[in-house]
Image (cartoon, rainbow, N blue to C red):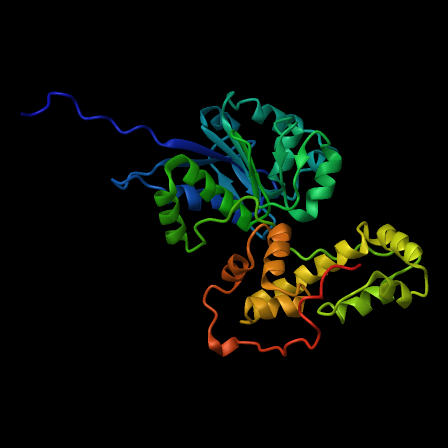
Length: 354
């Protein structure tokens, strides 16, 4: 028996409006179009409609040697279900003093209450200056995080994660983390299968947790007064060995108490915390560049055992050593293997400074 019920009309696509600001980064401007534009339902219909607007229709400058032409003005923001603000290098007062320009404030006033807000990299400055991030978790590119926090003290800045999701407000770190965040949104909206298909078509990893660390080198700040450089250099040659605080102090010919105070003044952390960080850095490089086993990596990095290595890498980077290696060496072949000799020191005792 045939049903007399009319066929259901597909729900309209979720509208994503990308706000293009002067000085934008073309790569980041394209991320929402690339990721959301590849999401389709089982019948092949687009799940998102992606449009771009500026503070006025017309050309928008970029950080490259070309401009992009934007068809729509800020009125388009009033029609958005999600607004995405990519990074810009010409934010002016927004970046300098945390204050919106008159034109930007007028544009953001078009956004309807309840609209989902997303920033990529330093696009978070715009959301913060508008007050959208007050009292909320947020992130940005690691190089801007300290400045971002000083400028917006009401924001709960987490400089180490790839992205944050606070329901209707989401922020990401730089460049590739914007891809991760957009995939996360697709996954949240439409499930794993749709997000994985988007990732497959885009040829990127299907999922990186937002809490995963931004993989960046973190050099020590320049010493301001009495230096502990000699001790640090001595340590870097012996990370795989057992290390004692008294040995470090001896390199500078000072007492343990004086050395500890100077070290914290210069680096902002204790000697033990710094050494653990350096061991994680060495482990990272071994995981990226060699095919050593986890036990070998643990010994070479000074953690002694694979269990200790997992504990410290997970705490520092937010992922296991195996997952980290998979990210950076997904198809390592025997042609670029690097073999390092095993350490001579005892593996179980190469731990934190005593």
